[in-house]
Image 1 (cartoon, rainbow, N blue to C red):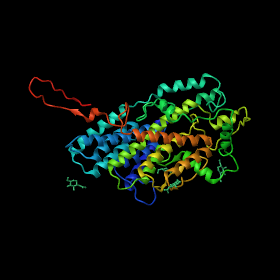
Image 2 (image 1 turned 120 degrees about the vertical axis):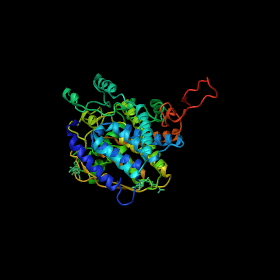
Image 3 (image 1 turned 180 degrees about the vertical axis):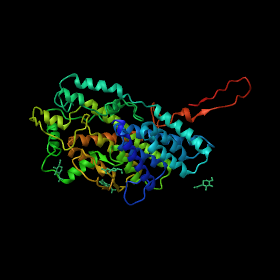
Image 4 (image 1 turned 135 degrees about the vertical axis):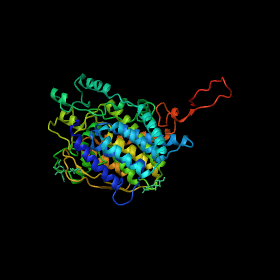
Length: 473
Ligand SMILES: *[C@@H]1O[C@H](CO)[C@@H](O)[C@H](O)[C@H]1NC(C)=O
Ligand SMILES: *[C@@H]1O[C@H](CO)[C@@H](O)[C@H](O)[C@H]1NC(C)=O
Ligand SMILES: *[C@@H]1O[C@H](CO)[C@@H](O)[C@H](O)[C@H]1NC(C)=O
Ligand SMILES: *[C@@H]1O[C@H](CO)[C@@H](O)[C@H](O)[C@H]1NC(C)=O
Protein backbone atom coordinates (compact mmCIF):
# COMPACT_ATOMS: atom_id res chain seq x y z
CA UNK A 1 0.00 0.00 0.00
CA UNK A 2 2.87 2.36 -0.75
CA UNK A 3 2.14 5.93 -1.59
CA UNK A 4 3.81 5.64 -4.98
CA UNK A 5 0.56 4.65 -6.60
CA UNK A 6 -1.15 7.76 -5.30
CA UNK A 7 -1.30 9.79 -8.53
CA UNK A 8 -3.25 7.14 -10.42
CA UNK A 9 -5.46 6.48 -7.44
CA UNK A 10 -6.07 10.19 -7.06
CA UNK A 11 -7.01 10.46 -10.70
CA UNK A 12 -9.44 7.60 -10.37
CA UNK A 13 -11.01 9.14 -7.31
CA UNK A 14 -11.28 12.55 -8.91
CA UNK A 15 -12.99 11.10 -11.95
CA UNK A 16 -15.38 9.31 -9.69
CA UNK A 17 -16.08 12.34 -7.58
CA UNK A 18 -16.98 14.32 -10.63
CA UNK A 19 -19.29 11.59 -11.78
CA UNK A 20 -21.02 11.42 -8.37
CA UNK A 21 -21.44 15.13 -8.16
CA UNK A 22 -22.98 15.19 -11.57
CA UNK A 23 -25.21 12.18 -11.11
CA UNK A 24 -25.95 12.26 -7.34
CA UNK A 25 -25.39 9.41 -4.93
CA UNK A 26 -27.21 6.48 -6.38
CA UNK A 27 -26.63 2.79 -6.02
CA UNK A 28 -30.04 1.68 -7.07
CA UNK A 29 -31.28 1.53 -10.55
CA UNK A 30 -34.52 3.26 -11.29
CA UNK A 31 -36.14 4.89 -8.28
CA UNK A 32 -34.92 8.21 -6.97
CA UNK A 33 -32.92 7.84 -3.80
CA UNK A 34 -32.18 9.72 -0.67
CA UNK A 35 -29.73 12.50 -1.46
CA UNK A 36 -28.70 15.21 0.99
CA UNK A 37 -25.53 16.65 2.49
CA UNK A 38 -25.13 13.77 4.96
CA UNK A 39 -25.67 11.06 2.37
CA UNK A 40 -23.19 12.65 -0.03
CA UNK A 41 -20.50 12.33 2.65
CA UNK A 42 -21.54 8.75 3.34
CA UNK A 43 -21.14 8.00 -0.34
CA UNK A 44 -17.73 9.65 -0.48
CA UNK A 45 -16.62 7.65 2.57
CA UNK A 46 -17.56 4.42 0.83
CA UNK A 47 -15.85 5.45 -2.35
CA UNK A 48 -12.61 6.37 -0.60
CA UNK A 49 -12.73 3.34 1.62
CA UNK A 50 -13.22 0.87 -1.19
CA UNK A 51 -10.78 2.49 -3.57
CA UNK A 52 -7.84 3.60 -1.53
CA UNK A 53 -5.41 2.19 0.95
CA UNK A 54 -8.06 3.23 3.45
CA UNK A 55 -9.49 -0.23 2.89
CA UNK A 56 -6.81 -1.46 5.26
CA UNK A 57 -8.37 0.56 8.09
CA UNK A 58 -11.25 -0.69 10.13
CA UNK A 59 -14.37 0.58 8.38
CA UNK A 60 -16.51 0.42 11.49
CA UNK A 61 -14.40 3.01 13.28
CA UNK A 62 -14.39 5.53 10.44
CA UNK A 63 -18.07 5.14 9.59
CA UNK A 64 -19.14 5.52 13.23
CA UNK A 65 -17.03 8.65 13.67
CA UNK A 66 -18.37 10.17 10.47
CA UNK A 67 -22.00 9.74 11.36
CA UNK A 68 -21.65 10.49 15.06
CA UNK A 69 -19.86 13.72 14.18
CA UNK A 70 -22.76 14.61 11.86
CA UNK A 71 -25.29 13.81 14.54
CA UNK A 72 -23.42 15.59 17.34
CA UNK A 73 -23.12 18.65 15.14
CA UNK A 74 -26.90 18.74 14.71
CA UNK A 75 -27.48 18.20 18.43
CA UNK A 76 -25.01 20.94 19.28
CA UNK A 77 -26.73 23.27 16.84
CA UNK A 78 -30.08 22.59 18.50
CA UNK A 79 -28.63 23.65 21.84
CA UNK A 80 -27.36 26.92 20.49
CA UNK A 81 -30.32 29.21 20.22
CA UNK A 82 -29.86 32.00 17.73
CA UNK A 83 -26.83 30.37 16.09
CA UNK A 84 -26.33 31.98 12.70
CA UNK A 85 -25.68 28.87 10.68
CA UNK A 86 -27.58 25.95 9.18
CA UNK A 87 -27.95 22.20 9.68
CA UNK A 88 -26.44 21.50 6.27
CA UNK A 89 -23.38 23.58 7.00
CA UNK A 90 -22.52 21.96 10.34
CA UNK A 91 -23.00 18.48 8.87
CA UNK A 92 -20.80 19.38 5.90
CA UNK A 93 -17.97 20.77 8.01
CA UNK A 94 -18.11 17.95 10.59
CA UNK A 95 -17.95 15.34 7.81
CA UNK A 96 -15.16 17.16 6.04
CA UNK A 97 -13.08 17.11 9.24
CA UNK A 98 -13.53 13.38 9.84
CA UNK A 99 -12.74 12.26 6.30
CA UNK A 100 -9.77 14.66 6.12
CA UNK A 101 -8.36 12.92 9.17
CA UNK A 102 -8.68 9.40 7.77
CA UNK A 103 -7.93 9.95 4.09
CA UNK A 104 -5.24 12.66 3.91
CA UNK A 105 -4.14 11.57 0.43
CA UNK A 106 -7.61 12.27 -0.93
CA UNK A 107 -7.92 15.71 0.63
CA UNK A 108 -7.17 17.74 -2.45
CA UNK A 109 -8.72 15.46 -5.03
CA UNK A 110 -11.95 14.44 -3.36
CA UNK A 111 -12.65 15.79 0.12
CA UNK A 112 -12.16 19.51 -0.44
CA UNK A 113 -14.03 19.43 -3.77
CA UNK A 114 -17.11 17.89 -2.19
CA UNK A 115 -17.17 20.53 0.53
CA UNK A 116 -16.70 23.23 -2.07
CA UNK A 117 -19.55 21.93 -4.17
CA UNK A 118 -21.85 21.74 -1.18
CA UNK A 119 -20.97 25.24 0.01
CA UNK A 120 -21.72 26.63 -3.42
CA UNK A 121 -25.02 24.80 -3.60
CA UNK A 122 -25.99 25.94 -0.09
CA UNK A 123 -25.35 29.60 -0.95
CA UNK A 124 -24.56 30.44 2.67
CA UNK A 125 -23.33 33.80 3.90
CA UNK A 126 -19.74 34.12 5.08
CA UNK A 127 -20.91 34.51 8.67
CA UNK A 128 -22.98 31.32 8.45
CA UNK A 129 -20.05 29.44 6.97
CA UNK A 130 -17.62 30.70 9.60
CA UNK A 131 -19.87 29.65 12.45
CA UNK A 132 -20.81 26.36 10.79
CA UNK A 133 -17.15 25.57 10.30
CA UNK A 134 -16.25 26.30 13.92
CA UNK A 135 -19.04 24.18 15.28
CA UNK A 136 -18.73 21.30 12.80
CA UNK A 137 -14.97 21.03 13.20
CA UNK A 138 -15.02 21.29 16.98
CA UNK A 139 -17.60 18.55 17.28
CA UNK A 140 -15.80 16.26 14.82
CA UNK A 141 -12.46 16.71 16.59
CA UNK A 142 -14.09 15.85 19.89
CA UNK A 143 -15.70 12.69 18.48
CA UNK A 144 -12.36 11.55 17.03
CA UNK A 145 -10.20 12.50 20.01
CA UNK A 146 -12.07 10.11 22.28
CA UNK A 147 -10.95 7.07 20.32
CA UNK A 148 -7.48 5.97 19.49
CA UNK A 149 -7.18 2.28 18.75
CA UNK A 150 -4.01 0.72 20.18
CA UNK A 151 -3.14 -1.28 17.10
CA UNK A 152 0.62 -1.08 17.60
CA UNK A 153 0.39 -2.61 21.07
CA UNK A 154 -1.80 -5.48 20.03
CA UNK A 155 0.24 -6.80 17.14
CA UNK A 156 3.09 -8.17 19.24
CA UNK A 157 0.79 -9.73 21.81
CA UNK A 158 -1.05 -11.43 19.00
CA UNK A 159 2.09 -12.73 17.27
CA UNK A 160 3.55 -13.97 20.57
CA UNK A 161 0.38 -15.92 21.26
CA UNK A 162 0.53 -17.51 17.84
CA UNK A 163 4.20 -18.40 18.23
CA UNK A 164 3.92 -19.72 21.78
CA UNK A 165 3.21 -23.39 21.08
CA UNK A 166 2.25 -25.89 18.48
CA UNK A 167 -1.46 -25.48 17.86
CA UNK A 168 -3.84 -28.20 19.00
CA UNK A 169 -6.66 -29.39 16.73
CA UNK A 170 -9.23 -26.61 16.50
CA UNK A 171 -6.80 -23.81 17.29
CA UNK A 172 -6.02 -21.04 14.79
CA UNK A 173 -2.59 -21.21 13.19
CA UNK A 174 -0.49 -19.72 10.46
CA UNK A 175 -1.86 -20.55 7.06
CA UNK A 176 1.60 -21.50 5.96
CA UNK A 177 3.28 -22.98 8.98
CA UNK A 178 6.87 -22.62 7.77
CA UNK A 179 9.14 -19.90 9.13
CA UNK A 180 9.05 -18.14 5.76
CA UNK A 181 5.28 -18.21 5.75
CA UNK A 182 5.21 -16.80 9.25
CA UNK A 183 7.36 -13.82 8.39
CA UNK A 184 5.16 -12.94 5.45
CA UNK A 185 1.84 -13.62 7.17
CA UNK A 186 -0.58 -10.74 7.56
CA UNK A 187 -3.45 -10.51 10.00
CA UNK A 188 -6.37 -8.16 10.42
CA UNK A 189 -8.77 -7.04 13.13
CA UNK A 190 -6.53 -8.10 16.04
CA UNK A 191 -6.72 -4.55 17.42
CA UNK A 192 -10.51 -4.38 17.41
CA UNK A 193 -11.06 -6.46 20.58
CA UNK A 194 -9.39 -3.69 22.57
CA UNK A 195 -11.27 -0.85 20.87
CA UNK A 196 -13.95 0.79 22.96
CA UNK A 197 -17.59 0.23 22.07
CA UNK A 198 -19.97 3.17 22.13
CA UNK A 199 -22.96 1.61 23.82
CA UNK A 200 -21.93 -1.77 25.26
CA UNK A 201 -20.21 -0.98 28.55
CA UNK A 202 -18.17 -4.18 28.90
CA UNK A 203 -17.80 -6.54 25.96
CA UNK A 204 -16.72 -9.61 27.90
CA UNK A 205 -19.62 -9.25 30.30
CA UNK A 206 -21.97 -8.69 27.36
CA UNK A 207 -20.79 -11.97 25.84
CA UNK A 208 -21.21 -13.84 29.13
CA UNK A 209 -24.70 -12.42 29.63
CA UNK A 210 -26.11 -12.47 26.09
CA UNK A 211 -24.07 -14.98 24.12
CA UNK A 212 -23.06 -17.61 26.66
CA UNK A 213 -24.81 -20.34 24.70
CA UNK A 214 -22.75 -20.09 21.52
CA UNK A 215 -19.35 -21.65 20.95
CA UNK A 216 -17.51 -23.53 18.23
CA UNK A 217 -17.61 -27.34 18.26
CA UNK A 218 -15.30 -29.45 20.37
CA UNK A 219 -12.92 -31.64 18.42
CA UNK A 220 -13.67 -34.46 18.04
CA UNK A 221 -17.47 -34.35 18.30
CA UNK A 222 -20.54 -34.94 16.15
CA UNK A 223 -20.96 -31.15 15.92
CA UNK A 224 -17.46 -30.89 14.49
CA UNK A 225 -18.21 -33.63 11.96
CA UNK A 226 -21.24 -31.62 10.90
CA UNK A 227 -19.25 -28.39 10.59
CA UNK A 228 -16.51 -30.18 8.65
CA UNK A 229 -18.99 -31.79 6.31
CA UNK A 230 -20.75 -28.47 5.72
CA UNK A 231 -17.69 -27.07 3.97
CA UNK A 232 -15.40 -29.81 2.74
CA UNK A 233 -17.20 -29.92 -0.63
CA UNK A 234 -19.34 -26.77 -0.60
CA UNK A 235 -16.32 -24.52 -0.02
CA UNK A 236 -13.69 -26.33 -2.03
CA UNK A 237 -12.03 -24.82 -5.05
CA UNK A 238 -12.19 -27.21 -7.97
CA UNK A 239 -15.27 -29.04 -6.76
CA UNK A 240 -16.95 -30.08 -10.04
CA UNK A 241 -20.38 -29.72 -8.42
CA UNK A 242 -20.09 -25.95 -8.01
CA UNK A 243 -22.93 -24.02 -9.59
CA UNK A 244 -22.87 -20.51 -11.03
CA UNK A 245 -25.08 -19.38 -8.14
CA UNK A 246 -22.51 -20.59 -5.61
CA UNK A 247 -19.72 -18.76 -7.41
CA UNK A 248 -21.58 -15.50 -7.94
CA UNK A 249 -22.99 -15.35 -4.43
CA UNK A 250 -19.59 -16.03 -2.85
CA UNK A 251 -17.97 -13.44 -5.13
CA UNK A 252 -20.51 -10.66 -4.52
CA UNK A 253 -20.07 -10.88 -0.76
CA UNK A 254 -16.44 -11.87 -0.47
CA UNK A 255 -14.36 -10.79 -3.45
CA UNK A 256 -12.48 -7.52 -3.84
CA UNK A 257 -13.84 -5.32 -6.62
CA UNK A 258 -12.38 -2.70 -8.86
CA UNK A 259 -14.23 0.59 -9.32
CA UNK A 260 -17.02 -0.47 -7.02
CA UNK A 261 -18.00 2.01 -4.36
CA UNK A 262 -19.98 -0.11 -2.05
CA UNK A 263 -18.92 -3.65 -1.59
CA UNK A 264 -15.54 -3.85 0.09
CA UNK A 265 -16.75 -4.25 3.69
CA UNK A 266 -20.11 -4.89 5.33
CA UNK A 267 -20.23 -1.23 6.40
CA UNK A 268 -20.05 -0.19 2.76
CA UNK A 269 -22.74 -2.64 1.71
CA UNK A 270 -25.12 -1.48 4.42
CA UNK A 271 -24.43 2.17 3.66
CA UNK A 272 -25.56 1.43 0.11
CA UNK A 273 -28.59 -0.49 1.33
CA UNK A 274 -29.56 2.40 3.60
CA UNK A 275 -29.21 4.92 0.78
CA UNK A 276 -31.18 2.63 -1.51
CA UNK A 277 -34.06 1.93 0.85
CA UNK A 278 -34.59 4.99 3.06
CA UNK A 279 -37.30 7.33 1.77
CA UNK A 280 -35.91 10.13 -0.43
CA UNK A 281 -37.95 12.63 1.60
CA UNK A 282 -36.27 11.76 4.91
CA UNK A 283 -35.17 14.91 6.76
CA UNK A 284 -31.50 15.67 7.23
CA UNK A 285 -31.79 15.07 10.96
CA UNK A 286 -33.50 11.68 10.57
CA UNK A 287 -31.01 10.67 7.89
CA UNK A 288 -28.09 11.47 10.14
CA UNK A 289 -29.64 9.80 13.20
CA UNK A 290 -30.38 6.63 11.21
CA UNK A 291 -26.91 6.42 9.74
CA UNK A 292 -25.42 7.07 13.19
CA UNK A 293 -27.40 4.15 14.60
CA UNK A 294 -26.40 1.91 11.72
CA UNK A 295 -22.73 2.83 12.07
CA UNK A 296 -22.61 2.54 15.87
CA UNK A 297 -24.45 -0.80 15.89
CA UNK A 298 -22.07 -2.24 13.31
CA UNK A 299 -19.15 -0.72 15.21
CA UNK A 300 -20.06 -2.35 18.51
CA UNK A 301 -20.99 -5.59 16.75
CA UNK A 302 -17.54 -5.83 15.20
CA UNK A 303 -15.90 -5.40 18.61
CA UNK A 304 -18.06 -8.17 20.10
CA UNK A 305 -17.37 -10.34 17.07
CA UNK A 306 -13.60 -9.93 17.15
CA UNK A 307 -13.61 -10.52 20.90
CA UNK A 308 -15.30 -13.85 20.19
CA UNK A 309 -13.00 -14.67 17.29
CA UNK A 310 -9.81 -13.78 19.13
CA UNK A 311 -11.22 -15.54 22.20
CA UNK A 312 -12.10 -18.91 20.65
CA UNK A 313 -9.20 -18.75 18.14
CA UNK A 314 -11.02 -21.35 16.05
CA UNK A 315 -9.25 -22.70 13.01
CA UNK A 316 -10.31 -21.90 9.46
CA UNK A 317 -11.45 -24.66 7.09
CA UNK A 318 -8.19 -24.43 5.17
CA UNK A 319 -6.18 -25.01 8.36
CA UNK A 320 -8.47 -27.73 9.66
CA UNK A 321 -8.87 -29.76 6.51
CA UNK A 322 -5.20 -29.66 5.58
CA UNK A 323 -4.09 -30.56 9.11
CA UNK A 324 -6.72 -33.24 9.72
CA UNK A 325 -7.77 -34.47 13.16
CA UNK A 326 -8.65 -37.69 14.98
CA UNK A 327 -11.64 -38.36 12.73
CA UNK A 328 -10.57 -36.73 9.46
CA UNK A 329 -7.49 -37.62 7.48
CA UNK A 330 -5.45 -34.61 6.35
CA UNK A 331 -6.16 -33.35 2.82
CA UNK A 332 -2.95 -31.38 2.28
CA UNK A 333 -3.98 -29.78 -1.00
CA UNK A 334 -7.49 -28.69 0.09
CA UNK A 335 -8.01 -25.12 -1.11
CA UNK A 336 -10.99 -22.90 -0.37
CA UNK A 337 -12.89 -21.44 -3.31
CA UNK A 338 -11.57 -18.01 -2.32
CA UNK A 339 -8.61 -17.11 -0.14
CA UNK A 340 -8.89 -17.57 3.61
CA UNK A 341 -9.38 -14.35 5.60
CA UNK A 342 -6.42 -13.67 7.91
CA UNK A 343 -8.17 -13.86 11.29
CA UNK A 344 -9.79 -16.61 13.37
CA UNK A 345 -12.95 -18.22 12.07
CA UNK A 346 -15.72 -18.41 14.67
CA UNK A 347 -18.24 -16.83 14.27
CA UNK A 348 -18.51 -15.21 10.83
CA UNK A 349 -17.66 -11.51 10.90
CA UNK A 350 -19.42 -10.75 7.66
CA UNK A 351 -22.65 -12.32 8.84
CA UNK A 352 -22.41 -10.65 12.26
CA UNK A 353 -22.06 -7.24 10.62
CA UNK A 354 -24.83 -7.94 8.10
CA UNK A 355 -27.19 -9.12 10.84
CA UNK A 356 -26.46 -5.99 12.90
CA UNK A 357 -27.08 -3.76 9.87
CA UNK A 358 -30.28 -5.59 8.97
CA UNK A 359 -31.66 -5.21 12.49
CA UNK A 360 -31.19 -1.44 12.39
CA UNK A 361 -32.88 -1.14 9.02
CA UNK A 362 -35.71 -3.43 10.12
CA UNK A 363 -36.32 -1.29 13.18
CA UNK A 364 -36.57 1.78 10.95
CA UNK A 365 -39.22 0.19 8.74
CA UNK A 366 -41.05 -1.90 11.34
CA UNK A 367 -42.77 -5.09 10.21
CA UNK A 368 -42.95 -3.99 6.59
CA UNK A 369 -40.56 -5.68 4.13
CA UNK A 370 -38.71 -3.36 1.80
CA UNK A 371 -37.44 -4.37 -1.61
CA UNK A 372 -34.38 -2.79 -3.20
CA UNK A 373 -31.64 -3.46 -5.69
CA UNK A 374 -28.05 -3.55 -4.59
CA UNK A 375 -25.65 -2.54 -7.30
CA UNK A 376 -22.06 -1.83 -6.41
CA UNK A 377 -20.97 -1.25 -9.96
CA UNK A 378 -17.42 -2.06 -11.02
CA UNK A 379 -15.73 -5.36 -11.83
CA UNK A 380 -14.59 -8.30 -9.76
CA UNK A 381 -10.92 -7.84 -8.84
CA UNK A 382 -8.09 -9.85 -10.34
CA UNK A 383 -7.80 -12.19 -7.34
CA UNK A 384 -11.45 -13.23 -7.57
CA UNK A 385 -12.27 -16.58 -9.20
CA UNK A 386 -15.18 -14.83 -10.96
CA UNK A 387 -14.40 -12.09 -13.46
CA UNK A 388 -16.46 -9.44 -15.21
CA UNK A 389 -18.96 -6.88 -13.95
CA UNK A 390 -20.42 -7.17 -10.45
CA UNK A 391 -24.08 -8.07 -11.04
CA UNK A 392 -26.99 -6.27 -9.41
CA UNK A 393 -28.98 -8.27 -6.86
CA UNK A 394 -32.61 -7.67 -5.97
CA UNK A 395 -33.73 -8.28 -2.42
CA UNK A 396 -37.24 -8.39 -0.98
CA UNK A 397 -36.19 -7.81 2.62
CA UNK A 398 -33.19 -7.04 4.80
CA UNK A 399 -33.30 -10.58 6.21
CA UNK A 400 -32.81 -11.89 2.69
CA UNK A 401 -29.49 -10.03 2.46
CA UNK A 402 -28.31 -11.72 5.65
CA UNK A 403 -29.29 -15.16 4.34
CA UNK A 404 -27.46 -14.36 1.10
CA UNK A 405 -24.31 -13.53 3.08
CA UNK A 406 -24.64 -16.74 5.11
CA UNK A 407 -24.65 -18.86 1.96
CA UNK A 408 -21.86 -16.79 0.45
CA UNK A 409 -19.43 -17.31 3.31
CA UNK A 410 -19.84 -21.10 3.30
CA UNK A 411 -19.62 -21.27 -0.50
CA UNK A 412 -16.48 -19.15 -0.35
CA UNK A 413 -14.80 -21.79 1.82
CA UNK A 414 -14.27 -19.33 4.65
CA UNK A 415 -16.82 -20.51 7.25
CA UNK A 416 -18.50 -23.63 8.55
CA UNK A 417 -22.29 -23.58 8.49
CA UNK A 418 -22.57 -23.34 12.28
CA UNK A 419 -20.47 -20.15 12.28
CA UNK A 420 -22.81 -18.31 9.95
CA UNK A 421 -25.85 -19.44 11.96
CA UNK A 422 -24.36 -18.32 15.28
CA UNK A 423 -23.10 -15.06 13.76
CA UNK A 424 -26.68 -14.00 13.11
CA UNK A 425 -27.34 -14.37 16.85
CA UNK A 426 -24.34 -12.17 17.63
CA UNK A 427 -25.39 -9.36 15.28
CA UNK A 428 -28.99 -9.49 16.46
CA UNK A 429 -28.04 -9.48 20.15
CA UNK A 430 -25.79 -6.44 19.72
CA UNK A 431 -28.43 -4.58 17.69
CA UNK A 432 -31.07 -5.26 20.33
CA UNK A 433 -28.81 -4.02 23.10
CA UNK A 434 -27.72 -0.90 21.24
CA UNK A 435 -31.32 -0.01 20.40
CA UNK A 436 -32.36 -0.45 24.02
CA UNK A 437 -29.54 1.66 25.48
CA UNK A 438 -29.14 4.19 22.68
CA UNK A 439 -30.28 7.10 24.84
CA UNK A 440 -28.33 6.20 27.95
CA UNK A 441 -25.28 8.16 28.91
CA UNK A 442 -22.57 5.55 29.32
CA UNK A 443 -18.88 6.16 30.01
CA UNK A 444 -18.27 6.04 26.31
CA UNK A 445 -21.72 6.52 24.86
CA UNK A 446 -23.17 7.95 21.69
CA UNK A 447 -24.39 11.19 23.22
CA UNK A 448 -22.26 14.27 22.78
CA UNK A 449 -19.95 15.37 25.52
CA UNK A 450 -21.91 17.87 27.62
CA UNK A 451 -18.72 19.91 27.68
CA UNK A 452 -19.47 21.53 24.38
CA UNK A 453 -23.21 21.67 24.76
CA UNK A 454 -23.65 23.13 28.20
CA UNK A 455 -21.21 25.92 28.75
CA UNK A 456 -22.67 28.36 31.26
CA UNK A 457 -21.72 31.98 31.69
CA UNK A 458 -23.51 34.18 34.21
CA UNK A 459 -22.83 37.71 35.33
CA UNK A 460 -22.28 37.94 39.09
CA UNK A 461 -25.24 39.26 41.07
CA UNK A 462 -22.98 41.92 42.53
CA UNK A 463 -19.40 42.99 42.18
CA UNK A 464 -16.77 40.97 44.00
CA UNK A 465 -18.59 37.63 43.51
CA UNK A 466 -16.69 35.08 41.41
CA UNK A 467 -18.81 33.67 38.59
CA UNK A 468 -16.55 31.68 36.26
CA UNK A 469 -17.58 30.37 32.89
CA UNK A 470 -18.04 26.62 33.41
CA UNK A 471 -19.62 23.41 32.25
CA UNK A 472 -23.06 22.58 33.58
CA UNK A 473 -23.18 18.82 33.97
C1 LIG B 1 -27.58 33.34 -3.20
O1 LIG B 1 -28.10 34.25 -2.25
C2 LIG B 1 -28.14 35.60 -2.71
C3 LIG B 1 -28.64 36.51 -1.57
O2 LIG B 1 -28.44 35.94 -0.32
C4 LIG B 1 -29.03 35.72 -3.92
O3 LIG B 1 -29.01 37.05 -4.41
C5 LIG B 1 -28.57 34.76 -4.97
O4 LIG B 1 -29.46 34.76 -6.07
C6 LIG B 1 -28.47 33.34 -4.43
N1 LIG B 1 -27.91 32.47 -5.43
C7 LIG B 1 -28.41 31.28 -5.69
C8 LIG B 1 -27.69 30.48 -6.74
O5 LIG B 1 -29.38 30.82 -5.11
C1 LIG C 1 -17.23 -21.91 -10.33
O1 LIG C 1 -15.90 -21.53 -10.06
C2 LIG C 1 -14.93 -22.51 -10.34
C3 LIG C 1 -13.58 -21.93 -9.97
O2 LIG C 1 -13.38 -22.01 -8.61
C4 LIG C 1 -14.95 -22.90 -11.80
O3 LIG C 1 -14.03 -23.94 -12.04
C5 LIG C 1 -16.34 -23.37 -12.19
O4 LIG C 1 -16.40 -23.59 -13.56
C6 LIG C 1 -17.37 -22.34 -11.81
N1 LIG C 1 -18.69 -22.87 -12.03
C7 LIG C 1 -19.61 -22.26 -12.78
C8 LIG C 1 -20.88 -23.00 -13.03
O5 LIG C 1 -19.45 -21.13 -13.22
C1 LIG D 1 -11.76 1.70 -13.29
O1 LIG D 1 -12.03 3.07 -13.56
C2 LIG D 1 -10.97 3.74 -14.25
C3 LIG D 1 -11.34 5.21 -14.32
O2 LIG D 1 -12.64 5.41 -14.74
C4 LIG D 1 -10.78 3.08 -15.62
O3 LIG D 1 -9.72 3.70 -16.31
C5 LIG D 1 -10.48 1.61 -15.44
O4 LIG D 1 -10.40 0.97 -16.68
C6 LIG D 1 -11.56 0.94 -14.60
N1 LIG D 1 -11.15 -0.44 -14.32
C7 LIG D 1 -12.01 -1.47 -14.48
C8 LIG D 1 -11.44 -2.83 -14.20
O5 LIG D 1 -13.17 -1.32 -14.78
C1 LIG E 1 -40.62 -10.55 4.84
O1 LIG E 1 -39.61 -11.33 4.20
C2 LIG E 1 -39.26 -12.51 4.88
C3 LIG E 1 -38.16 -13.20 4.11
O2 LIG E 1 -37.10 -12.35 3.90
C4 LIG E 1 -40.48 -13.41 5.01
O3 LIG E 1 -40.15 -14.54 5.77
C5 LIG E 1 -41.61 -12.65 5.70
O4 LIG E 1 -42.77 -13.43 5.69
C6 LIG E 1 -41.90 -11.34 4.98
N1 LIG E 1 -42.88 -10.56 5.75
C7 LIG E 1 -43.88 -9.93 5.19
C8 LIG E 1 -44.78 -9.16 6.11
O5 LIG E 1 -44.08 -9.96 3.98
